[in-house]
Length: 454
Ligand SMILES: [Zn+2]
Image 1 (tube, protein in one colour):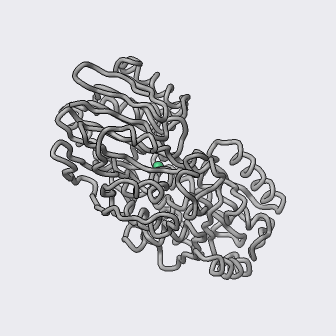
Image 2: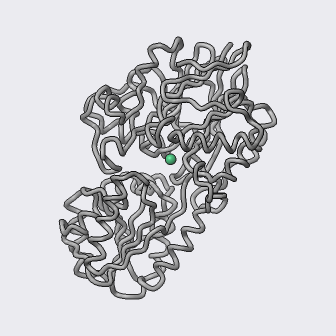
Image 3: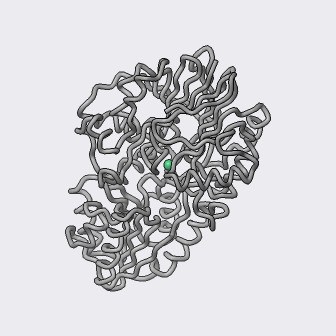
């Protein structure tokens, strides 16, 4: 029996992740994501009415048309976590396969939201919730296990396939964070056990591998301390405070809400995606917002809340979307005077997010900061730590798993190559047991050795 790793998306970009693993005749798909930059869209945008072939052509979702050449049957579609570059294409692609969708409870709740909003396709795939630490039988030859990991969204897992040919580990995305409030540390012990059993193939997140000065990625605890220090003085003063971060970063939002709760101010969470991620997390008992916080998702309710906050700015902290400067997101709309909240001299704007480095974001963000500054706002940037592992985290992970073969993923060629360089330092050799794939290529492991298929 052979095992084939098929790179569907996310091997030439950070976005639209999708990998298929073929074990004999059984195919297991990992992730079906979208590539946000390609459409000039962001976490608040709708793609519900668009057709999948149109989206494939624009490079927004993975090109799964090559699955028709794969001689096997899809047995499961497995999702690692709820970020859109991993689940965003589910409603466009999953309906083509007669296979269950498997995900942790929070990821599944987000998937259900996407499916509900879909306007183009009908959806009949069974939904099967699997928690971290649990296993399920996919076929007589394949068992799936979810190993707990940490990332920048709750309930992220590293799926593991146990097959008669060996173990396959799919690690997109992760960081090693031992100090989150809402999540225990990754299950290092289980990773070591898997390493001792024998991992055949390791598909791994290379997003930060090219950042040579990032030795290990700092814990969320570091972001908490930075935010505490930034907010300390402004919370005691009377000027406005707006914090902007990823709506899906529940750990960060929990931290911000706890800092604000120690003051006399109320926190208002504003934006469609804030409402989507945070209300779900709150309902599921993951996010525990202090009593004096409120979430507003509809344009009307947001505007009412902003009017109130504009008149009584000393009583509120606003948590808003729009950290990349996307013109139709909330913070840029506030800066462009398109809402009832007017930024005034001395107001504090805190970016708890990095600039996601592409030319469009850089331009948008630069414009946003200049607009805010021209109104006399104080700007605090980089109150953030990454959700992706640094180079030495990667080295630790390789040593824990000791895989026979490594396939870096979740990055452009520069990132994949930077990861490969690190793996070579650990004794791996390109083309031998270290493989760089492009979207549409496959790596085969069989009794006669390995080969790359195009
Ligand atoms: Zn992610």
